[in-house]
Image (tube, rainbow, N blue to C red):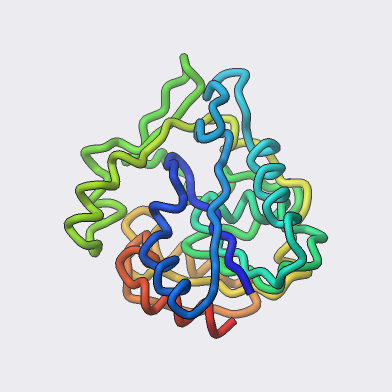
Length: 231
C-alpha cells in the first residue's frame, strides 16, 4: 500500500505539511508521496491570471495516481478534496479516500459553493493579480494553534499565492461516489468550522472525529497514521 497526500489551498511543499505522518507511516513500511499543484506555483508556471487552475492540479495528481498499480489510499486535505474528486475518478488502484476537513463535491460544484457564504477573514484576495493567499499574521491562530512550536515557526515558509480561478472552477467527476471514503472531522478547526465539516461529512461512507485543528497530520500524526493504516 502507498499513500498519496494532496495538500490544501494556498500552500506549497505538500511533503513538508505531511512529513510528521509520513515518517510514522514509513516506519510501518508504508511509502507516501505529495504531488505538486501547479495552481500554487509548485511547477514553475506563473500563478494568477492566465496561469494554471483546477484542471492542471487535477491532471498532476491523476498522473501520480496512475504511476503505479499499487493499492493506494488518497489523503485529501481541505481544497485537496476538490482536486481528488476528479483526479481519482476511475483509477482502479485507489482503494480509499480520506478527506481531512475537506469537501466531497458533486459533479458541477466548485470550491466557492462550500462555506457559510461570507468572505474568509484569514484570506487575502488580490483581483489584480488573480491570486489569493493566507494572511501570514493569522496563520498560526487560525490553522496551527495545536501544532508544535517548531512547525508553527516554519509553516509560513510553505505558504503560497494561488490562482483564484480554482475557487470557481467546477469538478467534472465525483470519485467519492464510487470509491470508499472516510471523512476526518477536525473538532478544533478554526479555519473550516466543525459544524460545516459535519455537514460535508454526510456524503462520506464513514466519519471519524478528532480533537485537532486544521492540520491533524502535523499535530496528531500518530492518530492520523493509525487511521490511515486502518482503512
